[in-house]
Length: 259
Image (cartoon, rainbow, N blue to C red; front, side):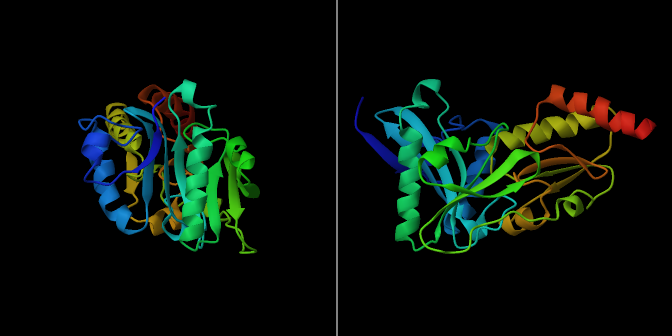
């Protein structure tokens, strides 16, 4: 294997280096993500790819906790949005630890109190094990199996989840979808769900979060950038396929309306 290097992705090199999770510039989420990056870079966001020659081994995205696009309070910490090795052959070779340790060192040099991350057993979220392996500890939990982990340098107060989840789920009546452009895969899901709801005769309200403060204060689940809610019930906390959405409409929305 060629020598490894960690490359910082910027809006001006994303077109030819890619975003790791989406490298096709024609993908409908690619443009939205790169546009989103232009502002987020100014807010301290780092999107880094671990690369060996032409092979991308993994990536990490993190940002100062005050600007985190998750429903957490992590002020003072650096916060990891995403970390991923999409190729199975790269998942147990220490690449994720390299990226985590690079983030920790960056946070230390930048005078943060530590690094925080959200973990869990659900889709599109990292397992806690890799973080425990690198010195993180569990500091808080939230409904649906979400865990908040932290690596603290000093005795700085740990990050925490909000406690008003029930209030967040009743902000709008009926079927409502909350989302943000932080993940390029969300865009495709949003367009499909809007079209499907219309085809099936369902009214769906949509709220797009455009600032991290909106996500932190109003998102109906910790994941923050996607939340499907119906009459105070969280139906999905990660973006879903068209078929999954139809199943939810049939089981949750139609049956509830009949009752």
